[in-house]
Image 1 (cartoon, rainbow, N blue to C red):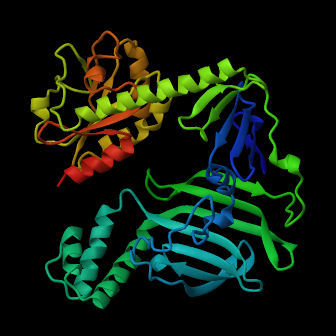
Image 2 (image 1 turned 135 degrees about the vertical axis):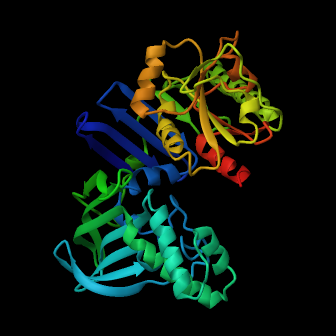
Image 3 (image 1 turned 30 degrees about the horizontal axis):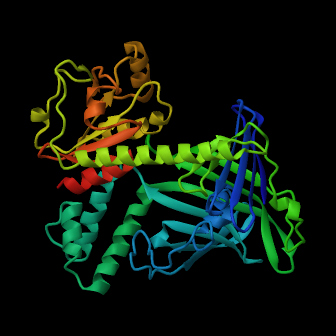
Length: 447
């Protein structure tokens, strides 16, 4: 059972209360917000979500070598720079970390570092490094230098470097890879740093870090990397192997609160009531079945569009960020990712930063991005979103269509947003779905 109160300085001292439990058959979650009037229950088949919800906050579980029911670890997954997973930890030095004398261990040629106490071998810190967004030129320079050092002549690009490395014997290729990866490290920045302090022996030989924190870094705007997010977690009390009362695994539910029951197929959504009549419960189940059939029908309609010529833009469409109206003929020969969004759509805002960044990186990307917005919004509302997220790519304002959000929405069978579509070089619909999935698809279609 987990009882968790989260604080949010932007709201008030306690922004929400969360209670979650696993009774051996189903997981129950209750979340109530104090920053606004909202609460809900969730019932799940698996405790996976419960574990990720709370245990993901614990720094020591971020070590990446633990396997739990809430986050299974694949022993064969390998590493970033060693796909076979053969790389080992190595002790590379000794230094003070938050005033604690520690051994410094590294893996991934230094891209992952741990700090282990010398007096008592407990984990106190973890740092994971990633490449900067603007590191292409410096990484290419490292590739050229490493190739010259190991006898690769005429190497001027990373593509040529990788092709040359593939021709080397396995052991020699490993040496080259190690030199190259270590050479890139000075241009990297820490993605996250986890700190684990104030260990307490909660049972004989069992030590728990009562103070845990992490800092997330951002280097999008150049060096030095800045801290973009932080979290501190202080454990007040930890009990191990104590007796647990049955009531800890029971949740008292409040009437009138929304419930999402994901343990049922199809999922049920209703307001909780202590006693439902047979007729009321039948209507809840029947509604879930109707919604499920409608969802499957809509999915089949979207899938039927894939592989067909992309629907044409209407001549009546209004265009933003485009000197002239785009046509499928003008897009021929290009892979295109289209984001269906709206200024009034909250979830759509999650995809807009990625879309904006892809447009900024358009010279590097093998595909182009654009968007389609439904009709009906005031132009000033759309412009406000464009300014907020710095959207520079072409945006098509769809034209009205009866029974749909717009002609293009109807033609692509889009009935929920955000939604993304990929058009291939021949002008055919190559895929529909979430933006991230469609970006992957676009890369696959591009040379």
